[in-house]
Image (cartoon, rainbow, N blue to C red; front, side, top):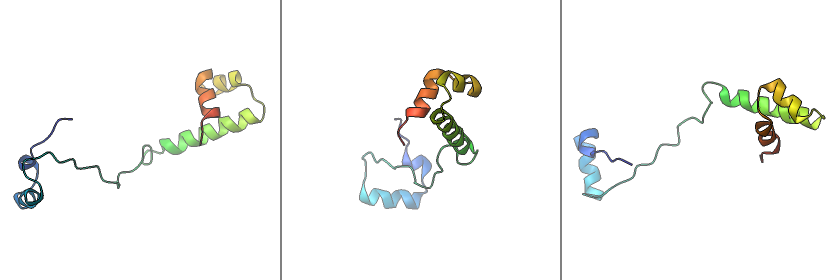
Length: 87
């Protein structure tokens, strides 16, 4: 991971405050938790979740993997991953 010089990024007041606690050492700043999950904004997460639920339902109703693969445009191995994935 490439580091960035805090003096180039932070306002001087904040930089002096951080230097009070840790000076001349590396400091890792984790990402905030406020970031949305993948697909939350675009709706992709919901789309794939619903599709995968349909695939599992059809499989348990007796539809063969080969037919599911053809109908959903996926490979047989992908269908198996969807069916057998742990929740």
